[in-house]
Image 1: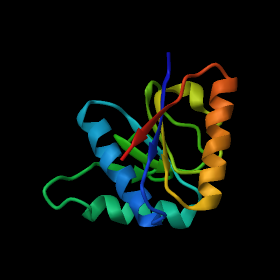
Image 2 (image 1 turned 30 degrees about the vertical axis):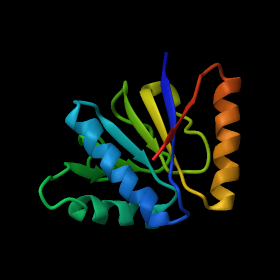
Image 3 (image 1 turned 90 degrees about the horizontal axis):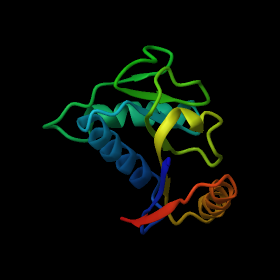
Image 4 (image 1 turned 45 degrees about the vertical axis):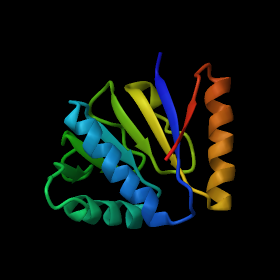
Amino acid sequence: MKRIEFYVLPDANPLGRLRAACQLAAKGWQHGMQVFIRCVDETQSNQLDELLWSFRAERFVPHEQHADNPQAPVVIGLEQTPQTTQGLLINLAPTLCAHIDQFSRVIEIVNQEPQLLTACRENFRLYRRQGYDPQRVEL
């Protein structure tokens, strides 16, 4: 069964979501998983790209934008079809990914921003309707 988790942050800081995405991507990659980070838009995608270069000085996370290398260990994208299967999807977008079947694990990162909370609650319900058992993880 596909593992779906909602990682809940205690504040509404958008940078906190990006930092959490970096940490989770690094952890997934270290455990041998292909990682796809689905961003909201190009601005967020570029912010995440920059942050992955600098968020930990002692550890490099090999990553690329989807347009540059869709088979990198960590891929930053939007709505593109992932090139690998059975990896980790980190979803920063407010909607479900159309390619969810290609992943063995899905992580949604939630903060306390009201619009995002509403969208993530709806996603939680949609996953349940699709037969998944999403779990909540407090950070």
